[in-house]
Length: 218
Image 1: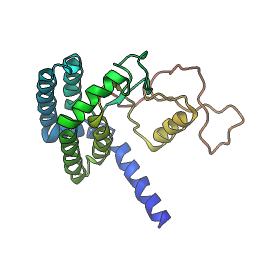
Image 2: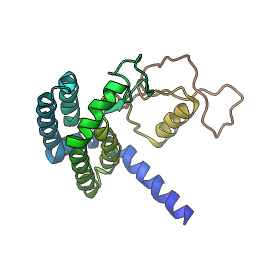
Image 3: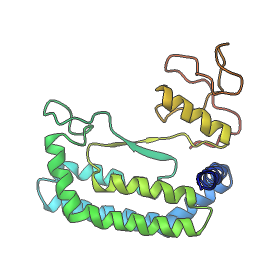
Image 4: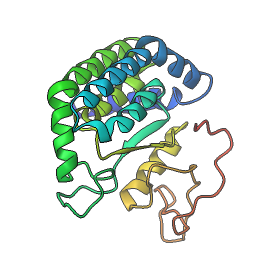
């Protein structure tokens, strides 16, 4: 059973990597807009109006508009936050559990968040049925958590691995703490202490050379 599960997960990863290559990536992005992007865009616009009517949510309206635009093309992007601490002295715009941000997130969750999460799940199922959108479907399940508690986060571009080797290299960087989800992919550099069959540690202190030829990061 363990081998079967491992094989299934590996094949899903292969499919996800394949779908990050052109022209499949463009097809995925167009498919997303046609099947869900427009609906989520409208949902966030309506939620923005609702937040404005709550008075206390007015400072966060600009952020919900940003999320609306994000939902039109989320595949090459991701959400992130710099800080996770319940502290008045941190910025509410970069800390999802800042006291002020918590109030806005609770209002959002009660009145808008759970409905949008259901929409994300429905979209994920539709995307998975297209096969080509399985990678998008998995991303939608991740974004459903963001939809529940969105404030205090920002949006940035992310790297899309186009080969299994690239995916494993990015995982190795993340495990070592050298990977932040941004910038072009780097070829591994062996320092002589790494086994030839393993993933090498990447050289450089926070810098990234030019992207690998053929990369389709957007």
